Structure formats: structure tokens, C-alpha cells
Length: 291
Ligand SMILES: [Zn+2]
Picture (cartoon, helix red, strand yellow):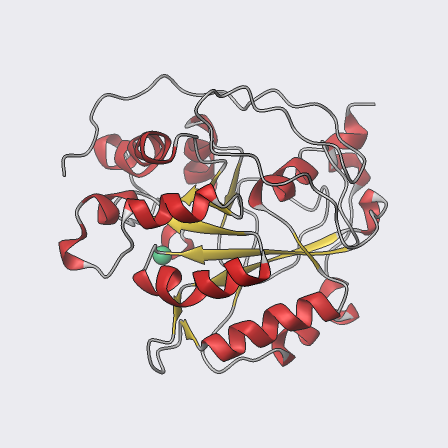
């Protein structure tokens, strides 16, 4: 299947209303955008911005043997169960980005499920679980691999669209050919950032909000290029929590979940010691700075 070669005009972030209540929604003027998630009511109460701590949990494959990046579905289910039982709100990628941009508040403990690489086991193993539990999640798609899937066990665009149509799944870019962005320039950098963005926009009907750095590789010039390409946030792989104003939106941390880790790993990550390593910085919080 040929990749689209005509680059669409850069899409500016959609205008949004300030949202500070549990039920407010965000306006999306894009005509062919995927259906809105159902009207949002969080299970947990909203917290003052200074108190919210988010962890972006990073998954790759499911039930693919004992490889480090393959998580058993029974462990995955136990982790989702732990989050639900422990007062951790699972939010969407857009909700987390809106929080960081100062456009919405969130509960005190937050998780974003992110699954990189677009592998088939996301659809065959994780999706039935996420769908049954109505859990929001995001997939980081290396677009070139879905466009030409002969060499990789990746999902089809139809499968991705089915997940997106549920309102539970958001697509982030994970590059085009899954290249390290560091020291990349010219056509190769354009493919990873702009072409990947345009293919997702064409295949899904909405531009990706965020970029998930392939191999976690980033540096300040790479982050600047991601920003220039119209993404609103970018995530790497080094494990740390996130607070409002805790750092640049273009090298946000994620916490990798590995094979053999059960629910216990989450009680470590959501414990006071791990969450306590990061501080809210009012001076860097867009919601405060604009007042
Ligand atoms: Zn990857």
C-alpha cells in the first residue's frame, strides 16, 4: 500500500475551552475526528493541580513468551485491577496533555496506559481486556510498519480504527520507521515526524496529539523538531512520575512495565517514595503562569 506523499498543512492544536469540572468536555472542530469519548465523569475527585501525580505506563507486547517487553495478560489484568482498587484514575492521552497545558484538572493519582510499536498482540491480547473494562489507552504507532507490514507482526489499520472508534483508544506517533530521532535530519527526520503525523491523520481522521520517541531516544534538538511538527507533547522511556510544571512537555517520562512484573510493581511506583521524587513547580505550570 503506497504511503501518502502529499503533506497536509500543519494542523494547529484544536481550540479548547478551559475545563475544570468533571463533566466538562473539550471542543473539537475537526469534522472527521473520531467520535468523542463518552461524557467524562472521573471515578476519583479532582485534586488541586499541585497534588496531581501522573505515571505513564509503557507496554509493548502481550503473551509473547518470556521476552522482557512481553507482559502476560494475567499480570496486565492484575495491574488494571490494582489501579481501579487503589484510587488511581486511568486517563486518556489527551486528558493528560490538557492537564499539562493547564486546561483541565485531574484526580490526585493518575495513570496513562501507553502501548508502543503497534504489534498484533495489542489487538489480539490487550484490546479484549481493555474493551471489557472500558479502559482508556493509547497506542504508539510506527506508521511505516503498518503501511508495509511484511517484516513485522503489526496490527492492520482496520484494527486500529476499530479500537479508536470505541472512544477508548488514541493514536500517538511512534515515528515512521521507528528510527532514533537523535542526529536525524532531512528526509529521514521528515518521515519520522511529519509523514508519520500525516499518515495517522489520513488513516484515523485526526492528527496525533503526542509523539512517543522510538527507543526513548531524544535530545533538545529532537524535542524542538517534534514541537515544530505540531505535536503538543512527547514522551521518552525513563521512569519517573509527572506533575504540573515538572518539566518540558517534550521529554515527559514513562515507566516501562516488564515481563514478570505483576501488580506489586505498581504499589512501588504509586508509593510515596517514588511519587515524592518529583515536585509541582508553580512557576512552570501553564495554568498558573497565565494568570
Ligand atoms: Zn518502539
